[in-house]
Length: 361
Image (cartoon, rainbow, N blue to C red; front, side):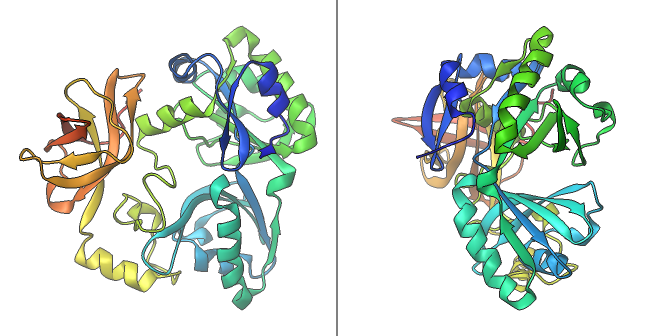
């Protein structure tokens, strides 16, 4: 079990620690509902240093990224980031990721913790053709997500960057909390605004301490992975291993917007055919109309009790106080407003397909 540079800090704060993606991670401190509300209305901090980081550089860096990623990375300017995915050869997804253009011929790829080795092998396989410079720096860097509507005001005193001017999916490499060169990125996984801070492992304790000093007047709190999951699900953001995986196509999962057929990429020909024919199933969002909590793996059934799909993510929404979830159903019954049922133990609990996001802010 690996530790992040802050594991002892979380333990000292009384965090409930659990194994996650091979790391000892804080799942909660005070409780998921309190932590969720903190991020929705104030400011909270997640240690997500288990995430993976790859540096791709050199004259062929963009060519390699264009080959392995579904989105069009040629559109990324320096100081901008882009959400994308790595398609596999059989119609599924190796991983979803964020691509940062640090400077000409240098990109940072941020991948999911569970997939670091798999992603590295997949990209390396295609790099045999291109010969780009690849460095796996996952073990050397830490990542803090400072999220919530008060993040800008609370953190402004820690940096010379005008945080209010940082637009979504842009970043600056600048000073933060007394450290001269960190990535301050207007990204996150909560839908409530804020930043993600990339720094070296030996710098993260100082940054953590100064972030909590600066945020004290704003009610800042540490937030665990349980609230990270409820926050992302209220926005309908996909979680790798639940809603997307090696068997789900980007077109089935609502990721057609990051699948650009203006270039050649891994399995693009087959995915283009799927787009033309139309996928047979779709990832939908649903709300329960009666009491119940949907969970991953529960069956989605029709009014006659026939199984028509499965829940990929589900929870009791802290913001909406109702059961919400994502799941796959046949395309012909995927329209918003369609009535479905979630099989929760012996009960078929009624639900309605809705448009995302669940939480409108």
